Length: 361
Ligand SMILES: *Cc1c(COP(=O)(O)O)cnc(C)c1O
Image (cartoon, rainbow, N blue to C red):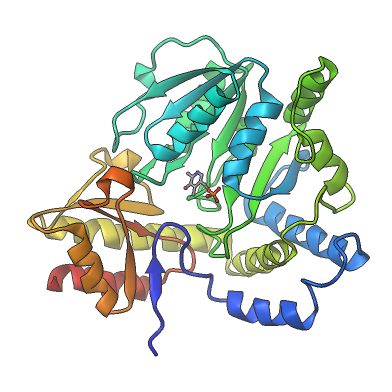
C-alpha cells in the first residue's frame, strides 16, 4: 500500500525515523522501566541535551515537560502573572491563551487584529506594561507568522514584562535569540512529527524568580507542574509525575536526527518547500487565493489558502486519491480553506507532487 503523506498541521505526518525508534524503544523496555531509574534519567538527560543543541539554548534556560501546549497556557498564567497579562490575538490559538487568562481571573488585555492579519507593531495601541506578554509566533488557525524582529521590538517596549512565545507550529524552524525572550513552548505532534501527548516548556531564571515570589506571597501557582516543582525534578533529570516516557525518548531521538541533518539545512529546506507551495497556489487564481496578504506575515510552516469556486473538501478529497492529506481550514473556515503543513519530515518531492495536483484539479 502506498505511504500516505499527512500535510496536516497537527497531528501531522510522523518524522520518518519514528517507526524505527519505536521498535528500539520496545526492545529496550522504555515503557516498562521505572521513571525514577538511572536508565530513564539518562534518557531525559539525552533529550534535553539534544534540544539544547537544536535550539542553541543558553545555559541558564530550563527545559521541562508537560502534557501539552494547552497545559503550558494555564501553567504560564498561574506561575508568571499575579494580576495582568497582555495577549496578541489573531486567531483561535492566541485567543484561547487569552481566554485561559480570563478564566484564571487575571486582568487580561488583548490587541486583536482580523483573521489572516499579523501585527504592524508601529500601530500598537497603548497598553500598560503587563506582568506577562503572550505572543503566538505562528497562528496555526490562519497561517500568520510573526517576524522575530517584531518580537524583539516588543521586548524593548515592555522590558519589565516576562515574554512568552507559543511556537507550537513553528519550532524548531525560527532561529530565536533566547536572550530576547523569557519562555517558549511547543507540543511534539506538529513540527517534530511525534505522537501527541507531550509538551515542552522552556523558561529562564526570571520566570523561576517570578513563580517563587508569587509562592512567597501566598498565591496559588498550581501543584505538581508549578515552575518550582518542575525545576526541582528536572535538576535530577526527572519529572514530578510519571511522564510520557515513550514521548520523551522519541523526542530525544528525533531531535538527535534533526541535529545530525543540521538545523540550518532544515530551515533552508523549509523555506524551499514554502516557496513551492506559495508559488503554486498563486499560479491558479481561479482555484486558490492566499489568505495572508502581507508576505512578511506568511507562515513558512503552515500555509493557508482560500479555495475558490468549489468546496475546499473537494480539493482535499482529490489529493487523498493520491495519498496526500491536506489540512482543512480551522473552525468556521473549514468549508472554504485548506492548510498545508510544511514540517521537517515533509519532503520536497511531496510538495512538488502537491503542486502538480493543484494544476490537475
Ligand atoms: C496545536 C497548538 C496548540 C495546542 O497544542 P496541544 O498539543 O493541543 O495542547 C497551541 N498553540 C498553537 C499555536 C497550536 O498550533
